[in-house]
Amino acid sequence: MVVIIIPALMRPYFDGANRLEVEASTLDAVLRALDDRSPGFYERLVEDGRVRPELAIAVNGEVYQMALHERLAPGTQLTIVPAIGGG
Image: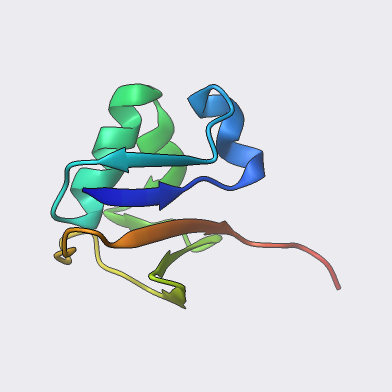
């Protein structure tokens, strides 16, 4: 299982849940599993075959750009990190 930490702005898509667990082995499979729970969610996060540039994915607490096909080990914790505007 992969644990996904849902940011506050996205919790309404998942009935207020702050974390979910899905059976998946790649980032793409995780995002598609989330889309199964909230149709249209995948398109909110993915554009042109990659995670939208205004988002990041933290893997076990470390943020980096991740390809959709990258493998995830069981027990991985993912956090969806939306960009914060400001100046």
